[in-house]
Length: 73
Image (cartoon, rainbow, N blue to C red; front, side, top):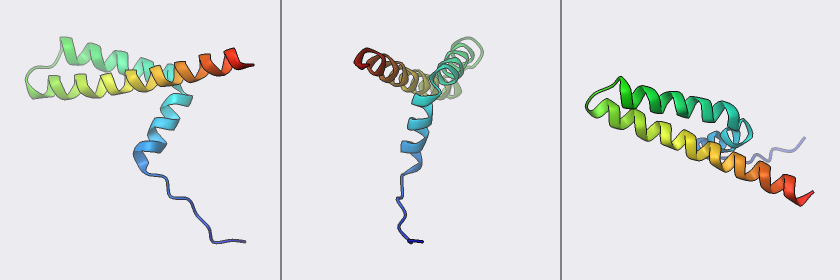
């Protein structure tokens, strides 16, 4: 056994899993955006909308990856 390990930062791992499971990521982003825009007020609204938009961008990267792999085959 070798003792070689690859350390991948947590944000990169989260982005990879978000791109793989893009339907779930898109759903979480859409629900977060709805809650942030309609239910929250003040600073929490801004925080929730920013996080939801990050989820939606991550889902968009997954959709792009899926479509580009489908067109290359």
